[in-house]
Length: 211
Image (cartoon, rainbow, N blue to C red):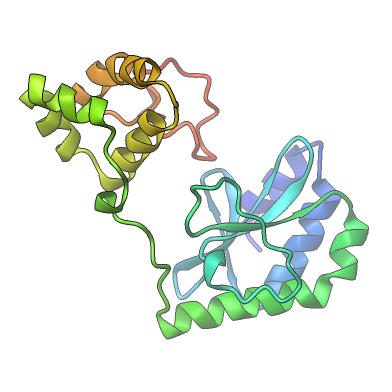
């Protein structure tokens, strides 16, 4: 156990008992405790296995490569339909955790074994995502935009393609593209903050202005 996690747990008002219980279970599995992205994180041979975090309505143990787990008990939750690798098990009280104690350990040990064996999550490539015709048109009008878009990291490209493709109306898709054109030219992703981090990362509180 490390002091940063002690301080984190001492400083939170909600889910303290639940996260302490999960911490104890994880440590019994032989993982190494760390403090990353302002949350307790547990590794195996320097590879991230699980993260503990709390939300308004639940706390959770996040499996970084949860998509690889067998999940015979149907406990794993995909946070969004576009989340490819990570999976959560969510809790609302200590009793749930205590009841599932051995099952949680089984999932953690399986996750560590998957890491040991080198298993990889088969994630979609950027080329697997459809490019809206409105964006293709915009690229033809502004080659600099296409160059800037292709220079973004794959994750940022995927984020924009999903965001631009969601609306059913062509006008709405075009408006989204126009609204984000300068961000793309600036080399920024859809969720980047002025702190330089994604607003979805645990260590960014989302209070910064968008770039």
